[in-house]
Length: 129
Image (tube, rainbow, N blue to C red; front, side):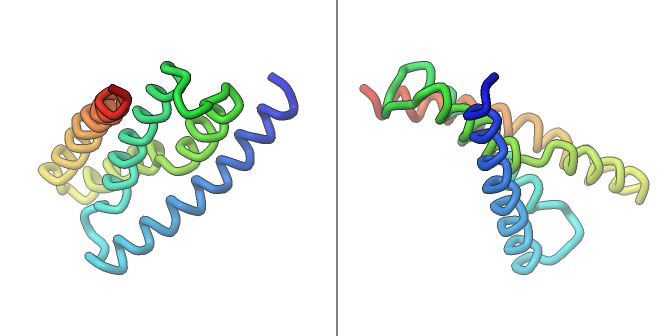
């Protein structure tokens, strides 16, 4: 773990955090508050993108260096995805006694997020054929 790696993660984290803020702001502005659709969208798209980055890194495609992987996967996508926010949103829905919404939200985030990460890997595999 050198200075370049730490810098890559820090810079990527800043980019990802700003992206998370903008995406969530736009979703809430469009559909309103209530169901945390912005966080769900961020978690699913982040899962898709991390699947793509992981597969590109594993296949050494498009010049994916270890430093670029750190910048994208740990930095940008670590700053962009919002698992801690997801956890708080779920707890808040439970606290509001919105049990069905909390269950739908939690299951949707986890199941769709895992499927999106797999889809990202498959997309890269198909594209590289």
